[in-house]
Length: 300
Image 1 (cartoon, one colour):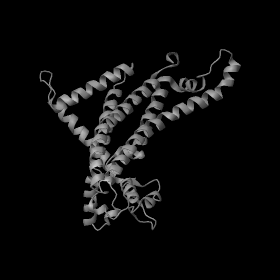
Image 2 (cartoon, rainbow, N blue to C red):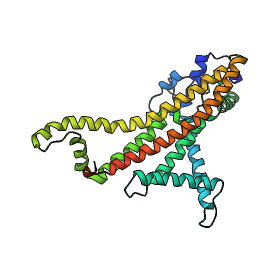
Image 3 (cartoon, rainbow, N blue to C red):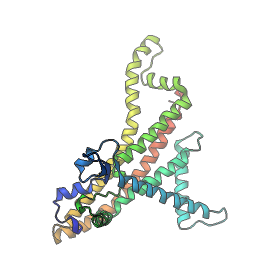
Image 4 (tube, rainbow, N blue to C red):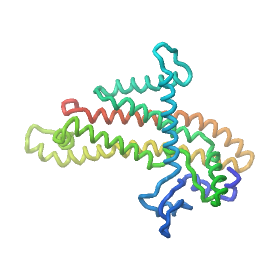
């Protein structure tokens, strides 16, 4: 643990590292940063997690600059190497997945899938930084500005914030609804929700099936964004907690520090697989959900 954390108990240390830097309206009516998690909860809907927004935007800009730089260097005659080789591999990987899972024509799907894969991976990758490194720097800066170090919260993994993961999931859900309506029409989309999975050639029996069909299909529809966002959040949040628990072991004596070092290396290597897999799963499910939105009744 960093020097500023020594006076904190293990429970306080964990809570501190799991609390976002939140800006919003304080109890006295003024606007400022929350000094604890309880105060952040009372700020209401218009509060913003500054660290989450800052890092997600920063990583999005890094993604844009990297791929734009590679695109400027790309040439039909040049042999790709370095960054260009990595970028072309990522593009080819996404293109192959889109072709295999999205048998329709839409110029937006592949670029969006690429953005999701790389952006989510970048956000997940921040979990591999030492848990006290960047937050400790933020505390030093906050202390120099007159803030109590323990009241400076700074999370650097945007995907451990449900606001980010659910926000992306709801955006995907909005696209699913949009394409379902534009590709199938209002009547076609309504039929999809009301005439499946139970159906009958008898008009009266089919009419009786409509309420049950609608409930089942509506639940299935709503479950898509919820599962999409919570899956990414849950896996990354659990991974962050393990890193925090390992960090606590470093302050429990030499024997625990030695064990923590080994655990940290093993978990970090395993976590590389997790962060990559979660980015891939989010991309794949997005493609699959959008492909289902393009399907008509005859393809079900």
